[in-house]
Length: 433
Ligand SMILES: *Cc1c(COP(=O)(O)O)cnc(C)c1O
Image (tube, rainbow, N blue to C red; front, side, top):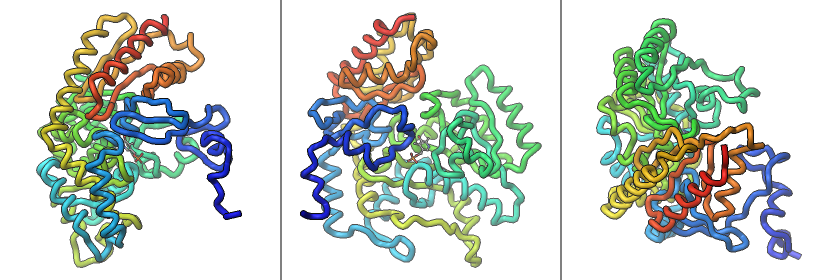
């Protein structure tokens, strides 16, 4: 019998999964079994039993151009035949160079240099390291990061440190880097936020400010005031506090512009990217920065360089997927799709806006969210019940608390959108006060 005789196993994948696999963000003792997805196409996922689900969150905002899109998979397959992987220290290659040139066309105009990493957490980790070392290299004693209270920047140590305090991080808090926090500006509290910012600047040696521009994904698609953010960034810039835009969630067209930072006049010093960067095909992160940030590392002294590197930095396949992703994003078809989805969400919002159980509706680009105004105590776990309702109707949405949000692939069809909307309207009927 061959050593790896896994095909002869009679049990289904969900059953076999339980034996050896440890899933992310999961307390296995109280979690249902994992649903096995066998294939995906466009905006749809298909499970082991053949049931289909509309991917209403684009598999965590990654595959915005649709799953298994031929133009992407074929280009990556061709690249795979030619150059699969090579060390990116001392070597370079066509996919990385072409990707850098393409990104420069869509990033905020002041971005000049790109540093590769592996995922969103390491993209922000590099952003933090760049901000800290920018000051260190110049002999500035600045070690404290500034962040928004309820931000999310990832799960590695630096990224955890700057994220809003979470009950899940208790085991690690003693090891965090130093961080001070301000609330997000909501238009009515702006002067209080600015007051707190100025106080923190005077009391701390701030190196950088990391923020999710305009939309905080993990905080349940919480949106904040662009004018307020602009004011914060301007004050940070006046004090040489490096502004690190975490565009891991907001990047690549989801807000209606290429980057959420494009809604602001003040451009970030550093931009962190991942998620839709590779069109949902392969894991990769990127941190871009201005010439001024780069120049603070440019020196005859070895130690002033950025001594960080991942084995798979700038993997040629991931770079190729990213390049095709940008070609799609900038295409007329996808831009039309983005406008179509924006309009569709706006129409849906008008349909439900007067419903007594709908509050805090918010939309930026194709990101649409609202809060369900029901008495939470009436439900054992409202979020889980909502999730189950959607999955039973063949829709993959991932409510956060009482927030229901849609962030579907740009290519989702109108019929698929209607199916999501109808299922949400069923929720409004089914979940009483
Ligand atoms: C998802 C996310 C991250 C972390 O990215 P991973 O690839 O999951 O490590 C960081 N910042 C933001 C804003 C995110 O949405």
